[in-house]
Image 1 (cartoon, rainbow, N blue to C red):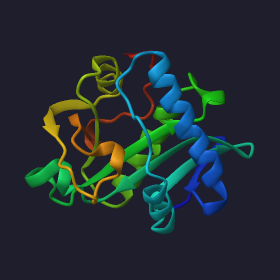
Image 2 (cartoon, helix red, strand yellow; image 1 turned 135 degrees about the horizontal axis):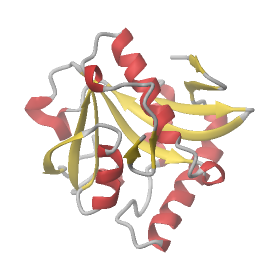
Image 3 (cartoon, one colour; image 1 turned 180 degrees about the horizontal axis):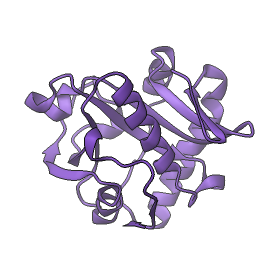
Length: 190
């Protein structure tokens, strides 16, 4: 899964990236706590390593810098239940390098995801986020996602520790509704 886009690339992470990935997660947790945002209390390093092995974690790289990491999957029945019909790509654990925060890294993730979905005949991009964080929900909705509903995740080892017993908002974007050439900034389409 390699897709050169503009002046950055989206490529699979490797075990050589693990230290940087862990630092990014630690920085994200510290940022969430410092700003009193609902967020992760920890992260599951074993789960991250498994995603690297399965080539389900990607990074956005520019000038040899990791700007952002995110995970994907193609089935998510634990969270999406009967709505999981095999026609979506799911985005998870989007984590931005604090050095590159505020530079629209999510737009790059979304551009890649929509392009990948279209090339593989998938209809939707799906994600979930904290139900008790209206700011982040509004942020994703400004990119065209629609709110599907709330759901409390099960307590199962099939989910990373930080995602168990968590009430999340389910968000979905139909690929046909996404227009890559429109720019999104600070929650508003321009």
